[in-house]
Image (cartoon, rainbow, N blue to C red; front, side):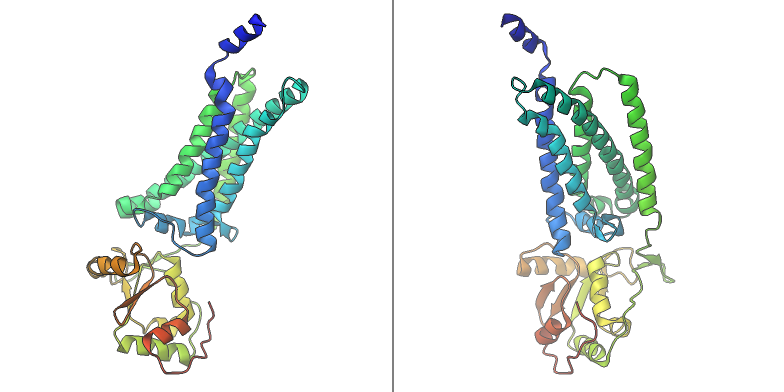
Length: 325
């Protein structure tokens, strides 16, 4: 008994607790990505101290195969939690062979998973820095993305130091193969990413072109909104703003009063947006986000159905709108 106690005391504490810590980090990562997934699927805005989260999470980089990227991250974190904690459910005193086998297999899976997640997160950090922070400064930072990258890196470090690896050479080879496969897969995923914006002749950046056409009902509503002084505050990079324009159609979208808030957008009116932002936040109790409609001194946040805009604005014309939500 004394020799067994002595051996246990000689085991570094990180080796005794590494799985539990990795499991806890994976659960935190799952909560983080689950929240992002819910906001994406419900088309709501994630709570964030800056507009950077909305910019990044609403960009084309945040969607893969038509699904939120965070959904795949959620699956990865759940898998890591299972790999880390599942062997602990087996009592080593009752079934030591099964416990040893599970530990050996899951440590390899933890290393491969953490390596792949760290490499992929590193690429996303590069995208955030080059595509968003470089343009918007602190307004281009996605804190949820940074948290996820830190979780992935922490799990990789804990996987490396959380046990004694017998065959370091084999571990290095496995790591190199994982890095190469992850990089190739990542580049293939984003290789055909469509451009979400393009330079305009005036020097500013314009959003993607509106594809839908307008019926007379959309055009009349747009004319009515313009006549009563309504405004839609938005940004060229905002996909929800583009959704709103698609509801109107290209003919009507060219009529209703759109206010560009992005500093580098076409016909930018950033000063006006900054002036109205406190009023919007006071009335709605929400951070100023895009799109936001101003109709008769009332502010409406998010993409609006045309029927709702018609009701709120007192529109009396035809309501057989062609484009649905």
